[in-house]
Image (cartoon, rainbow, N blue to C red):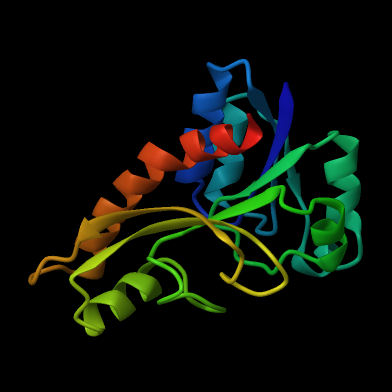
Length: 186
């Protein structure tokens, strides 16, 4: 059974979805949730589901503490679920092609540093795109530039707000992210 670590910075709805999905599988299990935000909602979600959590301040991520935690939990695979820091080189080196991210748009459009949450949906609407969606990709040393593993689309409606578009994109995330992780691990 593979051991998954989730890195998250926010509310943790995708993290919770992944934890619940793998709690019913024999292929993998989530062994730790790591965050760089002391007040991140993901901490409460993981705690309620019995998953250990680790808070590591942003500056400690680059000083090797995150890699130590990953090794302590004997992590095989890492899923980024709303994680807003660049993953340090030491982790990239130790986990080649074993770290995936989910992005709330169809990369390569609307990616890069600072493109997360409603900022992405605002940019998609402002560009008058006809569709948006999700991209699940391996990560490398650059924001949102790793090899694409999977994409799913949804329409952008003429009267969409960032919030209404986000709701459709979130539905795609919840539907596909855990299954794509499982396929990678098989």
